[in-house]
Image 1 (cartoon, rainbow, N blue to C red):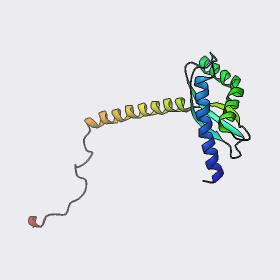
Image 2: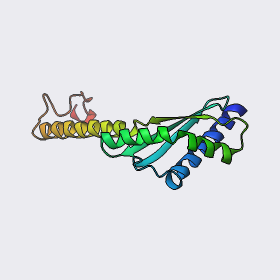
Image 3: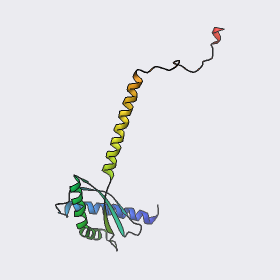
Image 4: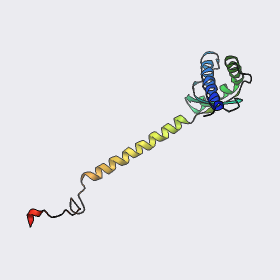
Length: 145
């Protein structure tokens, strides 16, 4: 990890905290739903910041939150500039995080795997060996001779 990428990571963490607190305290847009800033990334030159967020609610509520974040972008960028003290305040881009959908998909896959495992266990209950119980040949005991 280079010093520049370490600085970018620190800046990304700081921006995430500033934006999350500003959304909670300063932005009073009624379209802004229950939003959580999940991650942030800053380019190596510290000129662009991408913030990932999740929203609980319907598709309409998510669209309203996206519009509210776009309209509040200027206020949030001003807040980031004021609280970070950097010479160039990065531009902010908001991207809806696909984490909840991915987690739901993984849960569905796990449920299907559990069902398949239960079916295999049910089939195995009445199963018998196709041949001998011990298919490997064992050497004769010396006592038998």
